[in-house]
Amino acid sequence: MKTSGEYSVRDAVQGLLIEESLVSGWLEQWEREKNLILQGPKGVGKTFFATRLAHALLKGEQADRIEKVIFHAAYEYESFVQRALQNEGGRREVENGIFYDFCEKARTSTKAHVFIIDEIDRGDVLTIFGELFSLIARDKRSKNSAVRLRFGSTAFFVPENVYIIGTMNSGTISPPGSIDVLRSRFHFIDLCETEPDRITT
Image (tube, rainbow, N blue to C red; front, side, top):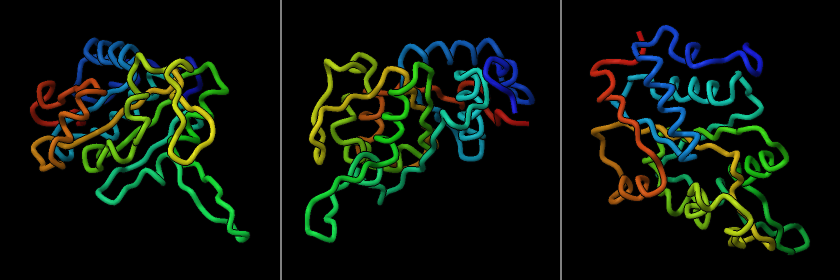
């Protein structure tokens, strides 16, 4: 495993049918936009490549600063952001979801953190992200944009050092309007335009 400062763009493209200069440009776009989606045919290696891009962004295989989920039709806000539960005494308790906890962890650090969402178009992103869908925009990453969440009692915002990368298949049926919704928050990279067959050897 490479440590911080050892993983480069050259490492990210090693063994892949893709140009180093192209990937460097994608990383610059990701750093600027905060949110990126890799779109391409099934089996092209999107998830594998997304992980390599994450390592390049972090400049090392920093597993403690990477989290991954897979969206599907039944995935919910309660698993992703927060849910309300009743304890044995009948009082309401709030349980944080995976993305909320990841953001809180990133908030304690100045280093970049990467959240990978596989099959991002398979879920209802507006429902899953809830209030946070507006807050993942690059110009909303500050306390000035913080909002009180559905079940929480304090204001919340997505930290500036959280970078999101999603993957999705091209040419498949997605929920109505989901692509337009995603394009409002994510920069798309179409791997079909980069390599007509595969990015992996």
